[in-house]
Image 1 (tube, rainbow, N blue to C red):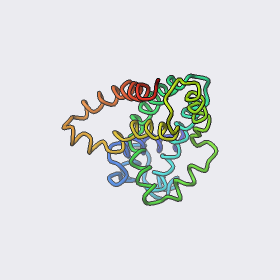
Image 2: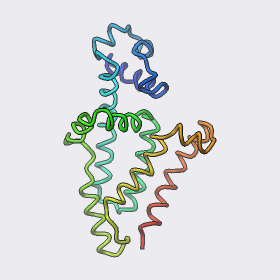
Image 3: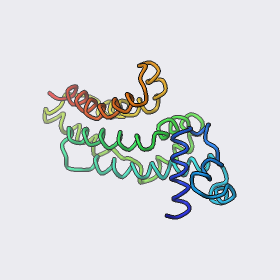
Image 4: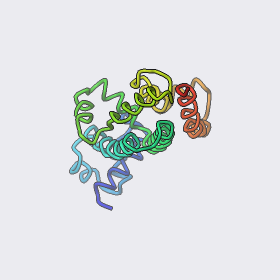
Length: 197
């Protein structure tokens, strides 16, 4: 494992536990088994490291999403696969949704740069498939973008607002984990039941 890979793994662990605000560069260096000077040699600031870790994770999930969007599977199978893959991925990278929301508010240019990359998730083929399945009478008439928004929001929200969710529902971390696993099937069923004829 390279030093950079050690840093990414350590940073992911610390950001997961402490969030961006609570994480310290010294903690990340300790977790990676290197000194702080070495960490700063690779990444000058915590923000630079956080963005690098974010991009590393984002460009892991983007190809998976595009593979689902562009496959020959039926729309219902794609919904199931997307929900399963996305929730599983974000469970391993809990800091991502909150970081994306933070960056959208504080640094929209960074988000714009990420989304201008050709490796970004591209749902054009999926949108076309939704339109075709509406014309064939397989699913109800709707704005395809509303369907995508429903899927994204239902999968992202529990992660982006996990402290709020756990507080309102008065559940432990263990109960929250169970709910997340249940959501894979729950979201799929909710979406499919809402759109099928």
